[in-house]
Image 1 (cartoon, one colour):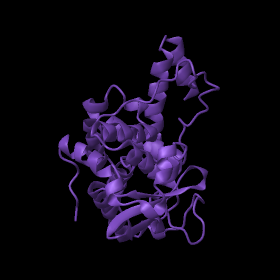
Image 2 (tube, rainbow, N blue to C red):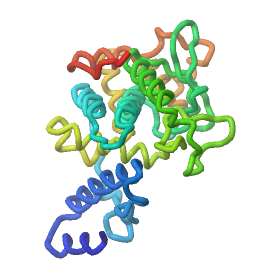
Image 3 (tube, rainbow, N blue to C red):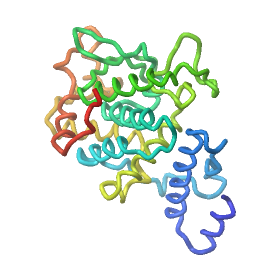
Length: 282
């Protein structure tokens, strides 16, 4: 892999091109590792040592994804190629990951969720999320996210994959990850980044120019921008995404959050208006 990268460099390939090609290969091998085809990802290299790390000078700002592009990610997740016998489970998980990220979650919050984090309060499904600084907040599920999560968990329970011992050692006794790896362990941030990059590549023309720059924070950023474009109250958006350092967010403590104080439904409406979303299997 290193020799190939050096050959590209010698051939005059620009740094950005080599970064993108390595990201694509890493996503591909990440999939092969996840499905047990290969034991390790040979493209998971130390980019800084190869001169391919991002610096303040060449780092690009977070891309601005549109509602149409979020829809394209959901569609691509639903048809993500997988040749294993659990392909339905993997596509359901991919849709669930994208759907949850469209709620404005941080990737660290997503991978930290347990099945016990999914609750119903006042008849509304929500997630109890542990955010920065150990601060909990309630995140209401849109119908899109609720359906995607239900379909994934139903398929996961059906295949009994979640009951398999976690070979990667990322779970602790008594805690079951909401989003799990192939062997039932807790996903890492790298797992989610790799999966999202694969989905972006699969999305085709809609994300062709930015596929190598799609990452969880881009979806979080999209949540904020789309919500504000839909005239959501900024206080609601700040409370949704857990910007605890903004004084207006402090108004919303756990006892005062209601369905009317979230912008999630406005963002979902924008995504739905952009086109059909993956249909619920049940």
